[in-house]
Length: 264
Image (tube, rainbow, N blue to C red; front, top):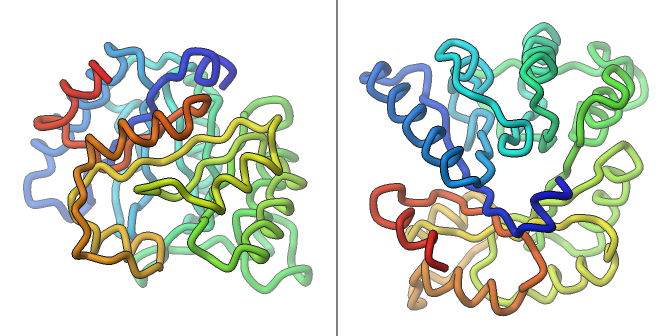
């Protein structure tokens, strides 16, 4: 994580193939191509976990199956609460064996297709009714001491007081870095976040898709659809506004944008 901060290394989101894909073999090959390209560029591959509640293969599964090279400084696994206890430990054990240290812990998006961790699975039965990222952070920290660098998400679009309160509970539970939800301009709540946690690595997420409706759905906040939005120009602006922060690229176009970011 310190290398990310020191060298301002891009974090590039990669979505694993959905399990119901009609072209699974091609999708797995495409995942490998994207992953290897990120490795070659020296960026960090941030591998999503059942993004938007869609049942997908785990990044750790594909890395292991295809024997993809793992540089521990260039891979971050996302891990949410929508797993069985057995699957949770399979993912964590694979990360440990592969040397993957950085894990972004999320409550996650659920669906009827996905199981969910129960309080009894992580020894918080009677303490909470539902497992959130707070309980999952503490469980991983306790079960795998001194193994992983754990992170938490921060949503500047939610009620500010509630979001800061949740974030502090996440930090108390073991989170040592923060990733914001995507922003497309200077954000007053993100500014406050930077002021409140000057010693915590904070990764600013940039939205690289032109589809603002999808962003609205992802952050549960209505974003005007009639604004002029150029993701690449917005990325340049975010660099100027937040020059000290690492930037994560969400839904980056590998065909249309990747070659451009190398020169930004």
